[in-house]
Image 1 (spheres, rainbow, N blue to C red):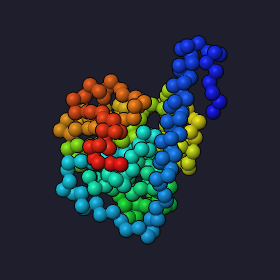
Image 2: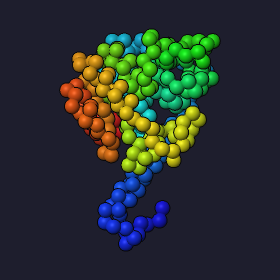
Image 3: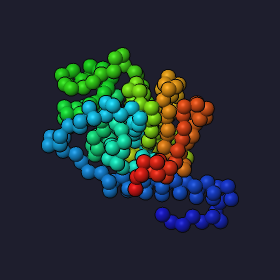
Image 4: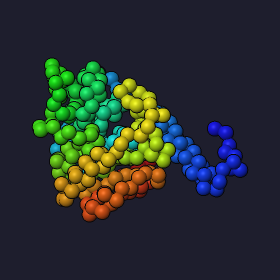
Length: 252
């Protein structure tokens, strides 16, 4: 990327362009770290996850969205602390204890891999899934996005402390670009596409937190992550930095 010629811009314009470049660089770094850590899973040979080992662990749970802020955390390192609720394409490189996917194309992709035959996959009822075995259905359908639905499921399991990762809400580049670790892969938008509207995700997240006042929710955020007032005002909602999260759970 060529050096910015600040003489061609006002002070305010130059500062804004520098910030955009900083965020673009941070996004690339997160994706590079994520790519180096991941490898495809063989769902035919791998043994199924023993979900029963978590039945009596009500202290901690982890809900993994796919915003780029999650790229610095290795999901495998969290398994010893509690069950992991993941979304959509996470299954490609990591086996969460509960995989939630509500997009039809993604569910069909998951079925093609056979992941649901040995692992818990949750989705909403849909005529497109006729003949597909071993799916778990929400009854009635939540009608929500995958991330908030995963958060709701974890809260229904009555964990005392739920940590939320990769719920970035806003797009990259000052909210303009698609924010997802799986951008540019099948069934996802391109990294250069416009950001997805996050209003529904936020409203659904707020609903889950309000519905479960006995649970403490902790959203793990990067320095540039959006912090909505709608969540910050809730008594059982907290934000912690990635650094603090890693320290708390003794992660590298």
